[in-house]
Amino acid sequence: MARHKQIKTEDQEDPEMNISSMIDCCFLLLIYFLVATSLVSEKKLDISIPASTQSSSSQKPPVDPGRIVLRADGSATWNGDLTVADVYNPDAQPGTSEYRSQRELDQLVEQLKNYKDLATSVQAEPVVMLTGAPSAPHQRIVDIMAALAEAGIKSVGISTADPEAN
Image (cartoon, rainbow, N blue to C red; front, side):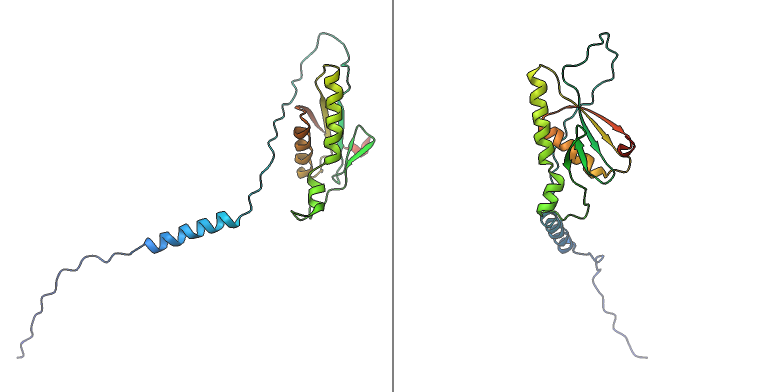
């Protein structure tokens, strides 16, 4: 019989996986997505809702509340006669002038600032009632609330009604 040499092998350790390359790739992907993602900064809406309290006096406030009516198509009017927002186009692309005019309601902000100046001139707090159609675009409501915040009006009442029924 032939003799077989028995070669003694060293005890091998368990195989290990080097994951440092995978961690590097994960961090690179994380940095890529952080840089590539466009961060949108929303305006802070610091608006307080007025409490419904029963007043013992029946005095009418010196300044009537301002009224914004938002229709189902996204158009809005100020105090029933002045159109301050055109029909809302949800397909407007960010960065275009149409998108800016859709989101930044400059004419409404100007009317709200005038109303606030009028109310503060008679030592009254400006109060605005926002009446919106149930099917009005939610983004348009946020845009109107941002316009109210930009004008410095904090007392806002919100109701849902069908403006076409009036």
